[in-house]
Image 1 (tube, protein in one colour):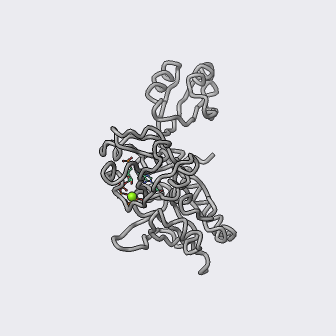
Image 2: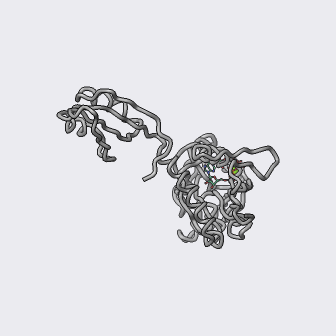
Image 3: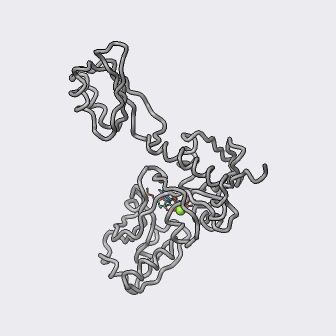
Length: 292
Ligand SMILES: Nc1ncnc2c1ncn2[C@@H]1O[C@H](COP(=O)(O)OP(=O)(O)OP(=O)(O)O)[C@@H](O)[C@H]1O
Ligand SMILES: O=P(O)(O)OC[C@H]1O[C@H](OP(=O)(O)OP(=O)(O)O)[C@H](O)[C@@H]1O
Ligand SMILES: [Mg+2]
């Protein structure tokens, strides 16, 4: 049926590769070809369009796209009226939010937002910056920057408001953070009318479930082990209490099997302790998805 098609915006630019990689983990294969706005996806019910993150919310609001992936920052900046299906905490290189920050040269006299009175600020997010200045009752010139904003101070402007993830671009340009303007994460957003359509809403909720379950599984591993029933309490005490481990019977009534999920970072300390406590047959395995 022709209307069983979800038009989905995939962000071009910083989020493109991380988005495609997350979809791949979730079971969808997205392929980009140069100069095409239509990446292919191995699901006949989805049509992908490659759109700049800045423009995503506008096209979603207008219904040109049913849904899209973009940063919360651009939803706020564009003031688009869209439905947020879910938050997806991933950025270009990390699984942390990005921050829009007010930054100045290391040796600048500007120490707080109040010192911006009458100064020049360059940014790609003019709306966010003006809202921030207004909140602090400061009057300054905010000019739109097409990019490479970090190279502008001190010759062209006094300060910038720019997005940062690892901080390396700011460091490379001898800039210091004065204040945080907005913290932002990636979101799956939908057109409000499209989300009224049961089929589209379910399709989007299913995509959200798969993407979120992949993010939830990152940095986690599964662990299974066997233990004498008499050692069970001691072994359970050695496992992080985050998750209730599954304990199941074995054919030998004196033994039980334990199945649990752990942060990969603690495994190297926990496995030797489990062995010491009497566990045997310890197996660590990778996990792809966690659905609560
Ligand atoms: N490391 C990062 N740098 C910039 N934006 C990031 C980063 N990680 C995540 N984002 C998010 O990606 C979106 C940026 O999209 P945009 O299309 O402006 O990317 P861009 O970096 O300007 O693209 P390009 O690579 O074409 O310059 C924003 O929502 C931003 O919050
Ligand atoms: O804190 P960092 O990890 O250094 O990331 C932030 C930088 O990444 C983005 O630039 P991008 O590479 O997209 O170049 P652009 O200036 O052309 O947008 C963004 O505009 C910052 O410059
Ligand atoms: Mg950019």
